[in-house]
Image (tube, rainbow over all chains, first blue to last red; front, side, top):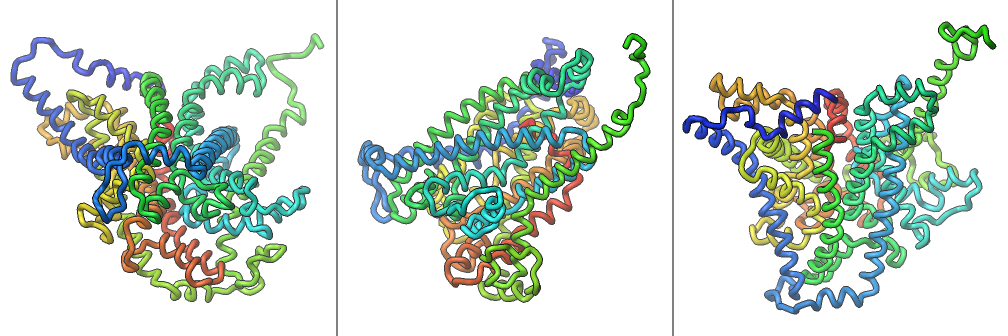
Length: 318
Length: 288
């Protein structure tokens, strides 16, 4: 860790500071030649993102002010698409569902990811193997995850078989609008918690040992050590996990699409599903673009948070 | 009490055996937890060998009384799954190679070079994390439509070719490589490409493995984009085929599980091959 930090200092310390300020002109040429290479390495990625990310997003903003069905050319309609969205009860419900899903999944993912990482980090022999086994859920194709869980959550499925002896009745997970979203959140946690476990574990392993030794000498028990050392030191990682999982959940499509199809009613319809349906089932491209802009705004909030975190963690880690 | 010798505590039975017992209990709890996690995977595997009518019994039959191995050839022959898997394989390998190549290049450029605006370029690249395909679905479709790439492999592959997460992962793994190595190589007359291939890449295997498996998994999984851009049966990837399979034919769900198992195997295999390297690379994903 200290080694890492010192290299980072070398990196971020304005690079060429050690060199004499009055360089001969051919040295300058050498340096700009090297930086030109650096730019050349990044250029393909920048061009790619211009074509497939920034360009489309700008186009989406433009389209959101038009009515476009891919047959006739786009008609400018001003703010009509947004007005329609505001007065559309399905859109409002979908927006609320998306927030519900993001909030529920993010909280549970963060807590369970941290819990699993702490369990792995106890120094128990074989813990590493248990971690690798759990990580398999993160590798299983989501498409298979959805098909399997749809059957597991069936009224006679395995989930109810496990819960019934514990005193739960037979729960109609996917056909009851009160339990459908929690069920999808549960599947999300099952699938992604092991990933965040790995993220937390990496952070836990990087914590300096001496704090713990000192605390133990002073007689602090495991709970106090956790609350007063681990938790404060992990704050940047926790914040990072919250933002990343929120970004991940904001764009979720496949799980509600395949497990419940957005139902019952609209109970599990989320924004990305609405974009697909509006754009490609009803061919209202302008309207779909307007929903994209709303989803983009949500992602923008979380990304801004992440950028802040990133510029801070650059100082901490790099 | 006063005679208690702090420096050399008397080894009580509890003290002597407690650490071992604690570890054994801990391991059992952890193993139970890990087992709980993979129950759905086990269930999927078992059900792929079950008789169709046993799927929705009140008690799941965890060990089939009769193993229906014929489920596999039966399911496979009901739809052109060979073609679907081939399509998915082509797409996923192309996406994986694209990510490995371009993310390595861009990561190297951002980690080891200072050029005017390099900090801004990094932010620009990271900002695409808020522009996933779900957000830009409609215009990306229109871009591909303009290129005339609807119903083509390049149409499926191209929007997935580079992911900002991969660029960042590679940058983070390269930033710790001392710059002296590069300067020394430059003084010895090595070209920039050669430095990248012979000095940087060999030190980045863990990050490259993580990048490879994640990009393979994500494109292998990709459903929404092929659904949008592909309409001809010959270009369907297996996720499209699998969902279609469940909806169209009213097939026994056991055979869906067969395809689900077959879909899971390639990712697990890749994981097994890269496991040693990934195990070391996991440390990096925490710094992303």
